[in-house]
Image (tube, rainbow, N blue to C red):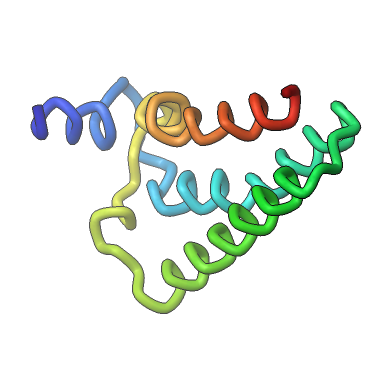
Length: 106
């Protein structure tokens, strides 16, 4: 199972290895607060729960990015093909978008 996960995460698809995995992860984590703010505006949901969710994910994204800058993980410095980056975004990072949507849409 680990070999399959590593293959999908780092070696899936043809083409050059052009996207560092840490950039892919950092982009998703740093854009999450903007996604949540967009949901808040779209659904006009300014409840305490939404603000708490925004603060939790916003601070988590900032701390994740600082951790990557100060203590970079060598495994995530690896460049991956575009398809692997897309699979990581959809399969691993994408489910983080669902709870915010469900909370905002009630």
